[in-house]
Image (cartoon, rainbow, N blue to C red):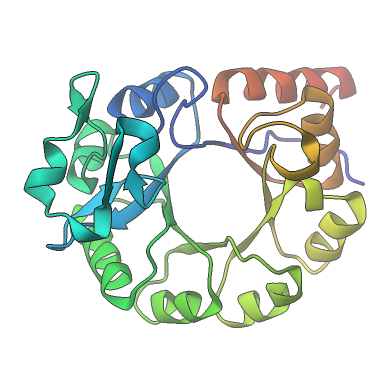
Length: 248
């Protein structure tokens, strides 16, 4: 257990998705206004090679469209709209919407080699700093690390792969809240490795990205240095409240 002296990073999960449609320009801009340190977006690629921001493999949930993103061209995908804006905005639209200085976390849902290569190249071409690549497979970590020195967040599914993740060039380990016990956090941070947590899901009974203020404060005290949350404004206030109480 540590006494925190600074606020963990607040990562707006799919933007300010507690108040706006996930992975939408409105959610991104609201996250900026809320003071999020990073905006997290999900990345997929269309059939003709355009990178877009969408969590699901298709748009059935968001727009009632069953076509898989990987099987549709960008022009056709752009015509599928929700509330007047594209259901799956392009990466270019993300870059255009966010201030140059705002950090971005890519949760790469499609980890084919050509997708990873296009994303690394697009990030480099944008001239932006503060890009983090969230990767689910160790092979993807090795692939991306060979092409960029950017931060890599390990969204790996098995905790037994944690050591291999850092050996492969990973930077930060992500834990689900249900995994983020004091012992597990300490096991990683005790080796000088940072831990971020995605709140909610699993045994918490909350949907992914939703948080409980007491649990958020507990994990901060245990050493977590970043949280992926749906409401960056309320989560920041919960953590600030805890710091005020400790006099930090």
